[in-house]
Image (cartoon, rainbow over all chains, first blue to last red; front, side, top):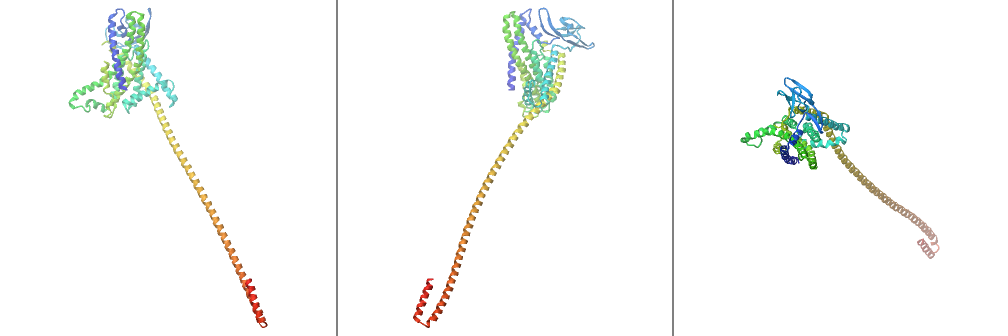
Length: 351
Length: 165
């Protein structure tokens, strides 16, 4: 079942990619005044202000704080209003949403960007929702769940029984908090990213990279002798092949989180690109007549994205659980049940 | 590298910080109480089911015990009834035997009494006969002197009289 879902999604993600490249490049070259490629990249990228929408005369924008650290000069904090439309402030300017010093010196940008603001918002939502769920348990004890508690309980039980217990085995309990947090963090942020005007947080490579690295660290810190034995002396492999096998296995350690990073980033970003591309069609053809087509396809992709939102959260959690399971596993004979090779396979498919 | 695949340091920093805080807070205030409650509930449900099974088993045992008791009581009753019938039959039999015996005894007594009476009567008859004989002999002895044939006739008539008695 798990493998089937993963395989299905790998197949699903391929045509999405092809479409993205085709549409973004071709449309970008065709038009002069309206550049869909730039528009799309701007929308899926991060920015230092939260732009809600624009009318003919006005931009409705929330200016977010800039936090810049320059070696020697120290920390400077100010509103991004001061940098709007190419203005220079305190020796800093924004070059394509990239904070740079006027004199070209090194700037470390810790600004509360649109993505960081969205991250904080999602953190608040997660805390509110799950403390409310926990309160339900505190209030009702072992009684039947109600309200928000009964909505999230099946998901929590699913992650525990179908993901953690089956992939990690008897030591699953230690990893439950991480797996649940990862699952709901990704799902909530995927859904938030689908709202109009929202940030594309889980489609940002920095976010997926961080999560993948945390998974890698959790895996490495929970690894036992067995895990390393499999990497440096794979059972059943002739000694002569070990010089080939060891590098392959070592690369495998890093390919697994790399595939996690790319899969989530690419799936979410691709979905956004496809929706934006359909909307761009209206402006490319400069005709309202195209809008029904755009809306129909956009709506369809949006519905698909709702599915993708939970599917990607599930896949990320499942693969994380599998990698941890591979690292904490004790018995040799159970190896073939674990998804040891899945990471590498999926990474190839996702590229 | 195009900016879209270029991870920004600032966002990585905030992601680490905020995700870490969320993870720690949720672990303490959400996941631990939720998971322990779930576990508690599951174990309580399991316990309840096991108890229900046990109760069912006990109930069955109780029912079986009751039936056994009932069967035993029934058997006891049958046994008592049978015994009572036997005893009553025996009593009747005994009474009958006793009555028969008594009757036989009484008949025997009566018979004995009759025999005694008869014997006594016979003895009396014999005594009377002897007395009569003596009387007759006396009379004969007295008469002999007078008339021989008449004497003979008289003895005969007397003897005839005795036989008739």
